[in-house]
Amino acid sequence: MTFLIRLIGFSLLALVVGIGSAWYMIDNGAFFSTNSIGPWVTWSNEGRLDADPYTRARMSRSGRLPVTGSTALYFTASTDSEGESLTAECDYEIAGRPFNALWWSIAAYDGEGQFIANKAGRHAFNSKNITLLPDGSFRIRLAPKARPGNWLPSGDVESPMLMLRVFRPQNTAEAGSQDTRAEILPVIRRLDCA
Image (cartoon, rainbow, N blue to C red; front, side, top):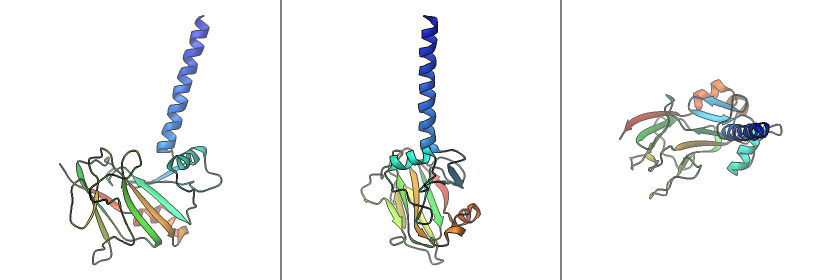
């Protein structure tokens, strides 16, 4: 009887640890499946035939088409450039330069991967609708209340997330190096908090 109880207990523990670790790996990745560049995280094997099972599961769950790095690059950020978690109580500035690509966008999502509901109906800025500064750079303000310029509403979402999509990047070999990406990816600065 004791053996049976131990066997059931061990089986339940293994099941919880197995499912929990798989869930974590699909949500967050690991050193072999993701690259972190400042606050931005990318899944290095997306769109590859030899992608690891966690990357494949993440792609399936997201509903995105698995495309290669020469076709599209995806980056997500849930922290600012100092490593602090993004929060709806704070205003942030996303600063960078337009990407050498056919099209790019920066969008705000809630913790569930859905667009943040807002009265302005604004969810993203892209290479076609963003207002650039005279020096050719851009500034996007992620904030819960309306701000002048390129304002991206964070609403009352507890933990907003940003997604940067770059379609048909030029010079993909150059853009693929971590040093080059660190130079061209936008900086996320916390400005003030309520």
